[in-house]
Structure formats: C-alpha cells, structure tokens
Amino acid sequence: MKTIAFPLGLFVAVMGLLGFAWPGTLISVVRRLASPAGVYAAAGIRLIMGLALYLPAPVSRIPHAIRTLGDITLVAGSATPFFGQRP
Image (cartoon, rainbow, N blue to C red; front, side):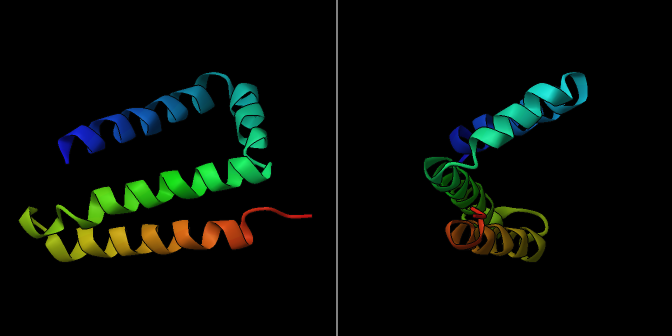
C-alpha cells in the first residue's frame, strides 16, 4: 500500500502547492477535467484514493475512521461520472 499511498500523497501535495503558488494554472488544469475523459480520470483517481484508504485500514491505529474515509471516497469516486460533468 505504501507504493500507492506515496504517489497519491505526492499528487495531492503538488496540487496544493500549485493552487497556492499559481492559482490560475490550477484552474486551467481543473478545467481540463471538464471533458468526458477528464471526468472519468477524476473518478479513477478518487477510486484509487478510496482503496488506498480502505484496504490498509484494519492495521491502522484508527481503523474505523480510516475505513469510513475510504468508504466516503469510494462513493464519491463512483458518483463522479454521474454528477461530474455539467451541460
């Protein structure tokens, strides 16, 4: 799980720094996700993040909280294709 968690954490950190340093660039990146392929990519990232939280939860110090966050993220990733793109 560390092989999945580290790149995902790095991705989140880079996006946060990008939003802090160059907000206009972050907005242009997010606008690219408005395409159908971008919505599916965002859903896939959310599903991977949810699994990265859900699967190692039993060996963590607070398994119920981590598993709940994983559940929420998995539901959000599953719902993204249905609600992610506006006309």
